[in-house]
Length: 402
Image 1 (cartoon, rainbow, N blue to C red):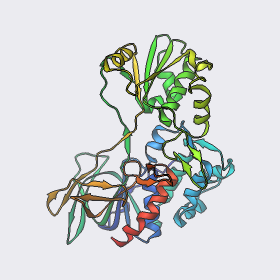
Image 2 (image 1 turned 180 degrees about the horizontal axis):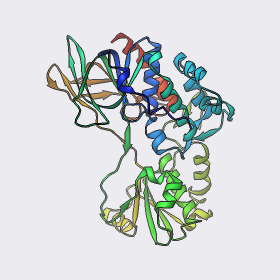
Image 3 (image 1 turned 60 degrees about the vertical axis):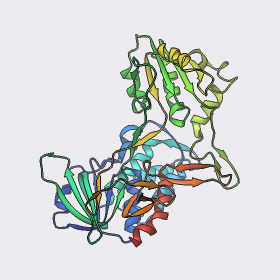
Image 4 (image 1 turned 120 degrees about the horizontal axis):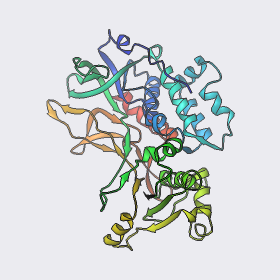
């Protein structure tokens, strides 16, 4: 795995610079795409802020997850920008990019391969390209019509250190998200957490093997089906006392190739997860599959009343909610001395207040995705490396003009 040089002194990199063309908060896949596009627009120098520079939650939490994206789109992500190509050129081979090139381009791979690519790019986008990295978090940002953004940075190493101040024309938030949870009608369930449930090796070592476990899995997304498969693999091998109750409000949705586009591209099951679901979870398949020995499907589409749902959950000991993601908290924002509470316009990819764009404030990534409409009129949000790149290329014209 390609590891960033965490001994690099990010503090010294920017000691002589206080004014930047852009500040980017977050170094996950979207942050990487944004920084690359800013370089392409010659919007440098760039101050890039993150508390780790380890490719975000993609690398930290989901390396063992099978991707629902074809390998060729990860390669296309890297091929999309000249700065990325430059990083590849100066990185010793074999590297994360050449590894992806050697895989079947129409096949899927594990998130680990995409995460390694992001790690390589994160390390390679450096001062030579006009990028100045800073370990820490953006504490606050204040917009002045006369001076632009005045940004206060809190170093990660020492919470007591005085905040650093920087100025920038634009501020782009790539702050990421974390798994969403909702209140349940019972309170005794042990919350395993989606991140743990998507990590098979860690999940196996965390759950006791000699205890009776009834886990409720809530949701029908790509993540939910992966979680069901992970629990089934444990129940049928190392954890024979494990049983699964699958709570779902709707039938399974699959991505379908159409003429030049993909139906359910952002919401449907793809790849090996799609195949597993069709073979083991559909009506008629579950009853005949070995999965049915360990898994019970419970329809929560409105047919069951709350008391019955509560009774079903009461029989469980653990729970995993795979119901989406919640944006992480953003820095405290002000505009001309007044607190700013912006809303994100997913169509224009800008933040707004009272229906008007906030000057120089943009967002990208899983927390702030672009809204798209397919040829049949279905609306969804574009999430994924290639989609972040595609959205960033569209938004880059706005960044350039700001």
